[in-house]
Figure 1: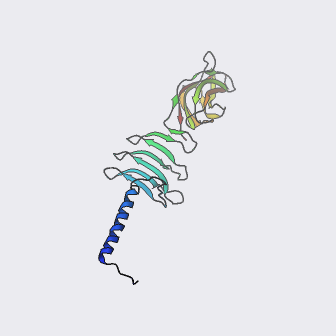
Figure 2: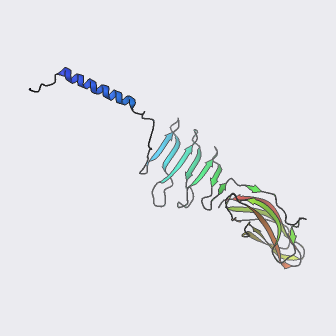
Length: 245
């Protein structure tokens, strides 16, 4: 039979059906502000950004400054408080752009509460100290007349930082014209040394790396020896802190 063209009413009824189909499908799709499966991917140098109520940054994930050594954008994380102060970063802010990125937590005034040491591992901040030096012998003996290295004081230490800063009070007694002291870590490696001459008490410090695993326990030791003269050399350990690289 010959083809009968649609009249206008047939066309309207067809469009109405298509509209009903589209409306139904829109009701069964997930909302556009939800992800029920899969991932959101931000690539090619893009950045995911969330603004606060005032329009300032609250969160950056993606390209941040400074750039990588090859000139490409650094990929990191910046988290701000509602007032705009920086709270958390995963980024490289050192003078060497090739250094690994560090996790840094800051207070509302910009001070560092926690930071990792990206050079040697462990903590860069906060600094943990100990002040429980004790004489190495049963009767505390903080001096020696020996020309060989002799342990005068010891300190139990737990490593949280790659380095240690140890402060001391030392003196060459009458008859000793020169002496030396050194700080050893738990493996016997020298953390730092100092030379002494006859005269007044010397207040000083040494700083150096500490061997051993992160959070591992060990004993630090102050040693001293006479290098010239016939008197004694004495050392008293003072405040001691873990420090970053």
